[in-house]
Image (cartoon, rainbow, N blue to C red; front, side, top):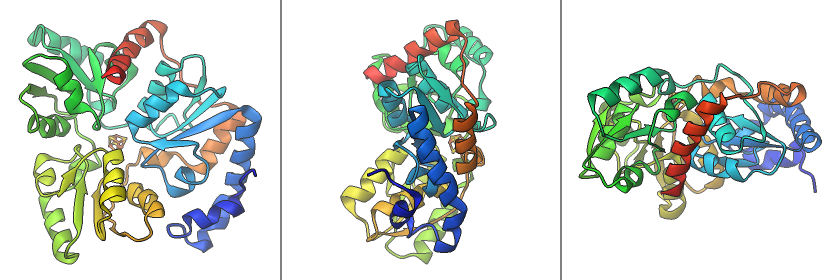
Length: 321
Ligand code: SF4
């Protein structure tokens, strides 16, 4: 049976108040219809709001999962409910498809922190040292890199190279957090995620004092002193798995706000404490602009073919690890 907005509300009623639902239901019905008409699929990142994540998305996950799944999409159109570098990665891996990003302004402070020119200068300064680039970068930066990584596979990627030191760009905190787990020397850049850099060790201590027994899971884009206060650090996919397998009675996910809402839908028996740092870029994506992306075929992602070929190699090397 084809789902409708009315049949989907049960799924999200714990995180979307009934009074707010009428605001969403018309767009949800329109998007479900447009997806069928246009043979489109929606890929949504874990930081998308629940009405997108649970009601219109076909594939959800962290950036690694979205990259892997984008490659396998057979539909004609991919709408990326996430930020621009994710849409570029989908286009790199499945270039024959139309890839739409509903708002071109959905950027990322990490992607903005480094340019291809910066990487060329680093290569001059550290000759022969491989460049491992976080997927949170533009295609032009990926094209200058040897291999990509995500927060879910960064350690494995670094160690797969079989070298004593690597440049790991652009997230300084991810690089420092991975450096603690490996013997490979890691040279970092000064980029930060504007959402995760705001968490402090005091925040974690205050949460523990206010919510005794709480299990604290932190994203490795947080500063190392925040990760040190947590019970576990991992990508959004790893956090979600942790909740599903360990079933803590009370948990706090030290990451972007919507993640807790999305995981809470699957685990009604777990109490989620919700610290809230919103990603303004992720929040540029709404049901309204997903609907208009499908209606108007906007905004199609394009990448210079010469850049795309080199960037694709760096992403494919990562996926092969
Ligand atoms: S949460 Fe941070 S890393 Fe993710 S898109 Fe927003 S700014 Fe970029």
